[in-house]
Image (cartoon, rainbow, N blue to C red; front, side):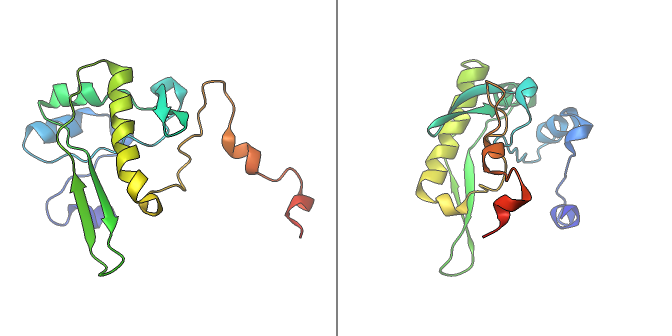
Length: 152
């Protein structure tokens, strides 16, 4: 996957390498693609509304925009099932200067907008709601307790 992404001059950064190389690339004129919807745990997140629940959301998008001196354009790529091509929808730039929680909520609102029209195009297999404010885990509710639970 990395090979495909870099074959035309793109850059890929591992999360373990920190954010500084990513910010430098943006300042150098590269386009950055940031995926803020993954759950990185409560210690790295703020809890804000996401559809009908609250979700651990990465809070740093406003800071990334400021440090990279860039605008953030929300976009959503989806497969066009009629012709097999990809459609890309881009919204106007975010205004990210209202604080971490409001900026995170703004990001979630964009995801809700895109996914609301095309829920089948979203990566629901990610454990997006793994971290909960009360420490519970939704996904444990659906795991079998015993091997016999799997028998039909």
